[in-house]
Structures are given as C-alpha cells and as structure tokens.
Length: 394
Image 1 (spheres, rainbow, N blue to C red):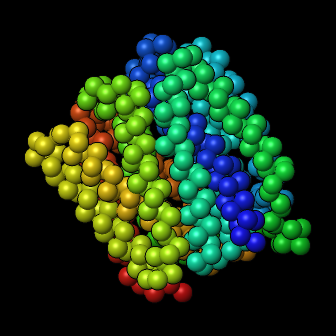
Image 2: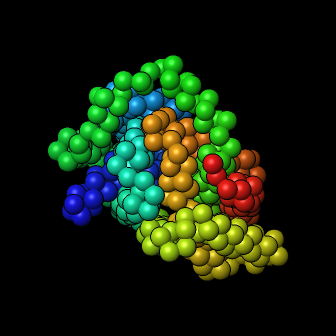
C-alpha cells in the first residue's frame, strides 16, 4: 500500500511537472533568446506569458473532459500536443512564431497539472490527500531546482533551442510512465452524470461557492507572487546583479528548495494543528516577510544576499500554503473534482499572467518592480485568507 502511494505520487508529480519544467529550463535562456532572435525584453517575456495564459485557459477544458471520459485520455492528448509544440519551438525562426508555439505548448502542458489534482481527489481526502499532494509537490518542485541548472548547461553546450528538444524527451517519458504505472481513477460508473451541461452547472456551483473561491484566490495570489519572480528573476539577477546563468540557476534552486522542504511538512502540521490554522499562520508569515523585503528595497537596501535570504524564508511559508489550499478547495467537490481542479488552475494562471503583465509595465532594470509584485500579491493573499478562513466553511 505504501509503495503504491509513493509510486502514484511519483507518476503524478512527473506528469504535472512537465509544464513547469518547460518554464524553469527556459528561464536562463531568456536573455540569449532575445539576442538570438533580435527581440526586446518585453517580446521575450511575452513568450513566457503566452505559455502561462494557455496553461490557464486549457485547464478549464481538460477538467470537465476528464470527468466525462476518464483521467487518462486527456493526459495522452495533452502530452502529445505538448511534444508537438516543443518541437515547433525548437525550430522557431523568430520571436512571433516562438510566442505562438509556446501558447500551443502550454495547451498541452496543462493537462498533466489539472488532471493530476483530480486524481489525488479521486483517491484520497483530508490529511491523506494533503500528504499525497505534498509528495506530488515534492516531485513537482524538483523542477525549479534541477531545470534551471540543466537548462543553463544545455544552453552553454548546445544553445537555447536544445531546451525544447529536452522537454520533448521529457514528454515521451511521461507517456511511457502513464501507460505503465497509472491506473484509471475515474471508472465508467462515475462518468454517467458527467456532460457538457453538468460541467457548466458545476462551474456555476463553484463560482457561487464563496469558500471555494476564497481558497482558490489565496492560492492564486500566492502562486502569482512566484510567477512575478519567474518572469523577472533572470533579468534582475543576471543583467542587474551580474550573475552568470549558472549562478542564477543555483540562486533560483535555493528558493525552490525552501518551497519544497516546507511543503513536505503539510501532512504532519495539518494533522497536528489543523489545515486551516496552518494556512492562516503560513500566509501571515509569507506576507510579513515579503512586505519587509519591499520596505528594505524602498529604503535603498538592495543587497543581493538580503533579497535572496528573505525570498528563501518567504517561499518556505508559501510551500505550506499552495498544496493545502488546493486540498481544502477540492474537499467538498469530489463529484466534480476535475471541473473544480480546472477552475482552480485556470483562475490561478490567469491571475498569475495578469500580475506578470502589471509588473512588466514597470520594469526598469532594477529589482523593485519584481519585489513590489511579489509583496503586493502576498498581501492580497493575506486579505483573502482573512476574509475566507475567518469564517467556518459549510
């Protein structure tokens, strides 16, 4: 039973990590892509934003479809579409083509993310679900540690296009693992009442559920703060602070390690103190640390070591928030877990894309816009926490 639990976490984590892997390997390449394709910083960031937008939009389709036809068929389709988009990106002749193909790539990548959360809800609830979700996050979060370093090495050896060939291979590996190690968790008997009409009705129920929506937006603004870091950190750390792509990858990996480490405590802390109290404390800690970072930056203290240390602490708190809010949001909606997971993912990535766009407007070559975007998102997450978890859920 225990080995099956960990095997499921490994497979789901790898499937959900393929999309983020395509982001994290890509980050060290952003400056070199701009030089290679004669593109501005804004145009290069648009290729990242297109990927995130399609990740959000695609989930709203994959979730209900996975309720109607089962979990595995949408996963197969998504991985094949992701592989096709990756090959196209590797061959892209200009920045405009790359932006379009990154959108296609994202439409494929989001299948693994939305369906994996639904599978967790199919199998478990409560603390067991939190433990499985945290294990999934462990595998999922290996991506921000290994992918930037792997990407920087590939870029040094074979150029930025090699990143896309590498993620094509990752998609092929995902197809093999899914075919051999992941059973169908949505049997035909449970699909009888699932249809396009029921999906639309389900979205209506979810949108009217203030508790569900509040939890979704806590996670959304928590993730958005990380998205602001994703979109801007390579330019800030490489161009502003003068790090090499490899040094940047190490700095990025350290923050990701903090997120991973704390996320593994969600099951134990939730069992001891309760999932809701844990989220409240973690969000307060996250907002406080990121607000301190912004205050120091506004006061003229822009030392790299100070910024990285506070990001390390803050993203540790975030590691307790993201998987737990997902479990709490899906807890009451097992019958439409795919649809609920889809709406959650769509809203989170759309909010993330909006935050990235707002931060991009104020980019000035310094760390301040990025830090302000991170702190602002953390404070909004705190506001949603106070409004949502101050009440007792139905």
